[in-house]
Length: 52
Image 1 (cartoon, rainbow, N blue to C red):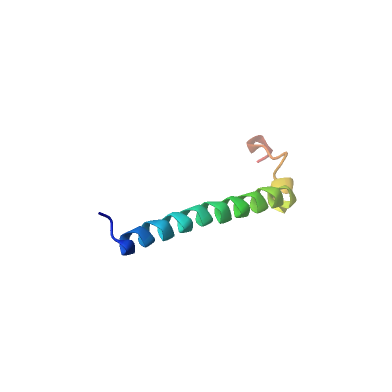
Image 2 (image 1 turned 90 degrees about the vertical axis):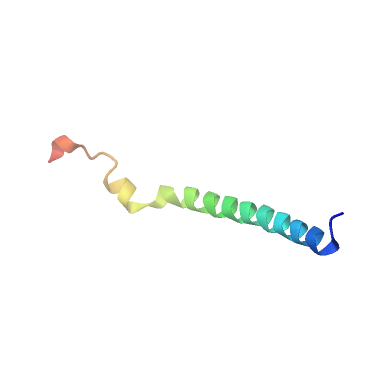
């Protein structure tokens, strides 16, 4: 049988994994939405190598 200590370890590991995925997803959404305001993107938007 699985001991109580081992069961708590699996439960805590599962909760930490789920929370990590949620926080990573939130950070991803924040940085994706801020990417529109990136000045380098705007500066090089119409850049071509033939401009050199």
